[in-house]
Image (tube, rainbow, N blue to C red; front, side, top):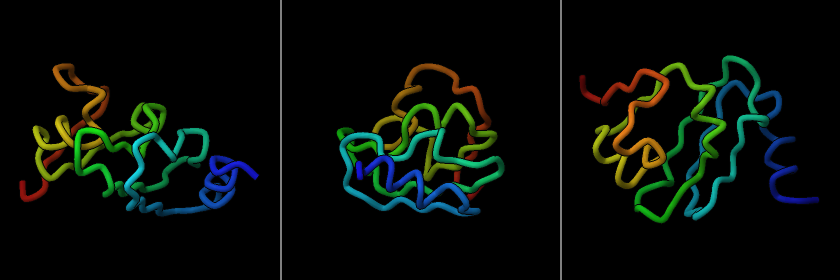
Length: 94
C-alpha cells in the first residue's frame, strides 16, 4: 500500500491531525481531510521541509503561525511568500 494511501486512510475520520515529520515533500493532501478537521503541522522548520500539500492550505479558513515571516521562510506558508494567502493568518501570542 502506498504511503499516501495509508495516510489518507488514517486521516479520513480524524477530527485532529498532527504532523511532526522531517518530510521534504508534502505528505498530507486536501483529499485526506474531512470538513472541519483541525491540522497542526510542526515539521516544516527549515526551508527545504514541507508536510502539507497546497490543497490542504486551500481548504483552510485560518492559519496560525509562530510568526508569519518565519512560516513564509521555513514553514508551510512558503508557497505564499510575497503573496496574500486565501485565508486569515494569525500569529501566536497575538
